[in-house]
Image (cartoon, rainbow, N blue to C red; front, side, top):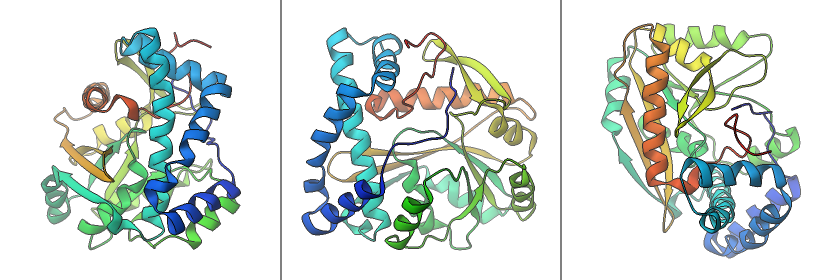
Length: 293
């Protein structure tokens, strides 16, 4: 199905508790809270449990017991990325180590000043990518295209404890005014960054085989990227042990106006990431039509 409703779970109190634990007890101590949170999700979130179990059991071929255990581990890993994101945004970036793989591709795009499109996915911890980009984006040339669906109180609180980033944002709006912002940014030879793995009901989608089963993807990023005569790069920020993150950048080699070819190249790159980081698939909804309900 690959259809997302745009809503994520979380409360203001929950985020305040995370920030308090991170600042007073340390990041790794804050992880302890996740044993209880992950257990709650594992026991009571029937729909996301079913969708995630299907991913591990049917798409990755895990045994029943391994798939069940992986559902819990996935929740725990996702919780770690949320704590990490909050910690980094709150000014604790120096507590983490970072590895840049393919960063020369991004440097080249910025130096050539011809514009370009970056496409990522909801795997790993892409939300902290702006902190990676800040180190190489001296002229504020990267624009993240994103929804603005977080609860306003939570958003205001996180902004109050966050270090300001130089990255610019383009908010997806119902009136499609974001299209003009994207065009203006590209006209100024800036970089546009999309995620390519979630679409909303009523929007155009593309269908392709992903992990051996048909799934739907938002057409917008691939239509726009394939029609522009600019480089397209797949980027991911993946969590590794010991507060370490690994940024991957890979240039897509596809034909002009071939959105299906670009989608297939994107899917191949995401599959390679998931082969190495299977627990970091964070689309907790019915992604494939055959997913269990």
